[in-house]
Length: 335
Image (cartoon, rainbow, N blue to C red; front, side):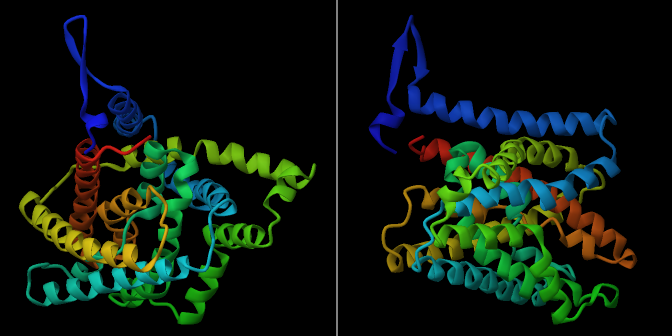
């Protein structure tokens, strides 16, 4: 931590933080405040379970695609980042293989132990958390990490998750079609094409396409708020197996942290001139909880496991947020 960031000064006899620390606190408060508001409106039944499901659908079909469209429209899409995309894919795969070993040794005593050990809730938590703290303009930094993760989720993680139950098994062809039809993927592809073709400014300035871009901007501007409210509303603390949950959380956190550090050092060595905020983007990514889709693919016959995984993922989310804030205070970014 630099001396500038930890410097304190006295004002009328009271010790207060300097401007960089004040700015960090000012950006952290809204994140937790919106999560708290989401939790309260759900507990007060202002928002029903069906309402939460509807908002989640809107998030993945409208809000996140809008945000990612702008992220990739202005992103530095040089060929060097292909290595980063491949590295993230490999990072997730290594975590799965480690999780598979731990599952066989009963350290992760769950049918879905290996799936819990890898994958990250990039959409519902990662984008909102990172852009909420560092600003929407910083979104391209973590969005580049998200591309490799999306490939892993669709073509490795989802088939593995579905393999535990015949009820959810699908063919590779169906997965490929679903991937190609996903609004987030469509948004990213269109944005990258416009970016690489050098048409970003032309699209903005044209009176017709510019109107569409403005509309997308309006939608994108509320993404963080909606995601954080839904995140808070989704928190549940019923029937928690606290000992077992903490074991899953801590084992994943320690191992993922070690692998993430090694992966970061490798990427930092192999890819020159990474963005200044890349270390914070990588930190945000590996701290994220397991994907929220896990309980969706747990069949009714495994209801107890479904409850355990849902609660553990929610606890992991709170744990992630707490560790994220602590690290930011220890190593405050330049905002």
